[in-house]
Image 1 (tube, rainbow, N blue to C red):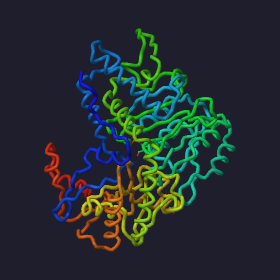
Image 2 (cartoon, helix red, strand yellow):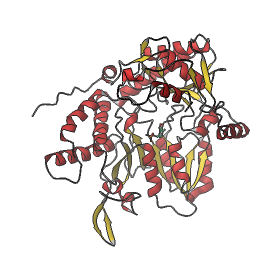
Image 3 (cartoon, rainbow, N blue to C red):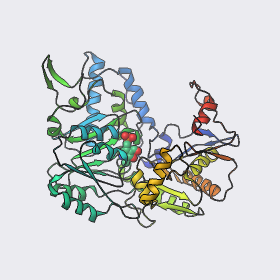
Image 4 (tube, rainbow, N blue to C red):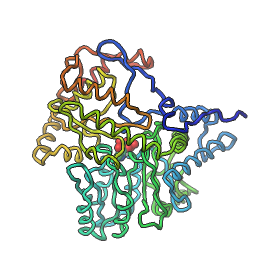
Length: 487
Ligand SMILES: Cc1ncc(COP(=O)(O)O)c(C=O)c1O
């Protein structure tokens, strides 16, 4: 048996070299290539090399879990079960009292929780205007959802939150709040919110998708007033993009009621007219599970913990402060969210617009001429983005009507640059430099708007995708047309 030759990074400065694809080049409009700058980590991060190496090793022994006999089945089962424990300990969950359920992503985790809640007539869910749709829409299926507002900088309005609890008192079943915003990066005071919810006999769910890659979090012991009852996060946002999401919550809570999805793997015994469900997490993980995804998540946690979340947070704070300074040099650029003096409680997300330049045009120029990958639009948080853009109800209705009519020209939105633990000042310099090119109208392409998609694409430009990934079956022209919204 060989020893473990995988070398795990110990410091933040070692992380960049251990990001898969960090040296990738991307083609640009003038026919050359540039080193790709990836600033869309808020959507999905690249993988840590160690995650891949662990997976490569594990795949020698891959097997279905909790089913087979034989060495591989036992090894895979042990590794998968341990990955659950690693995912729980990562947020300091008390594993005597809480269960760790593996799903596909945070969205599935929230849906699972909403599906598994035993709703009562009159139940109210309090959530906020700053949520990702994944922490809003699942609740609307079952309960009255009250959205607590935010101020002009995007911070949660605590007074309105207290008022909402007072108004709905004992009917509030659960407070559902993001740990960190995917738009402004604002980190919410989740323990204070938990205490408030518990005072009113409600539970709290924290959507930690944007929080856990950037900050350490402790859900606290179950008896603590500031305890987080339920928490979810996604491996693909923390350097293990292999399809695992995590939901953590009280074991007893999942022991009650039937699982929302049933089939293989969730039962102790079945008769023709009787079923006894397994204890969680198996009860909540119907069918064959994504074993490699769980192993990958545990490996990513090992990297993050080895370097230390506090060291990562410090690096990212410095990076965001630098980015804010650099972006202030861009003519006509407005950053949304906290001002430059309030960056402490913010993860590495910057959203902005350049005066008189549509957000989709900015994003397209960054990509096609600067090889900078960002995201634009409303980032699955339409109400929050419209609030930050100061849309009133009439504007919002008018745009909705236009969009439903097939015209996305005036789609509201922003450009988002989101940073990971491996980004550096050079990445930000390229972003800022390209944004100056945009603001000063020094870009080279002639960009055409496609009204149906609201996107811009430079005339005559095609990404030579086959040169980079020769396993594609569609044509480059079709790809370009898709991005220009012509299909
Ligand atoms: C704050 C927040 N919550 C939830 C989600 C949904 O995560 P997933 O796509 O992994 O389901 C996202 C994704 O961007 C997010 O940013």
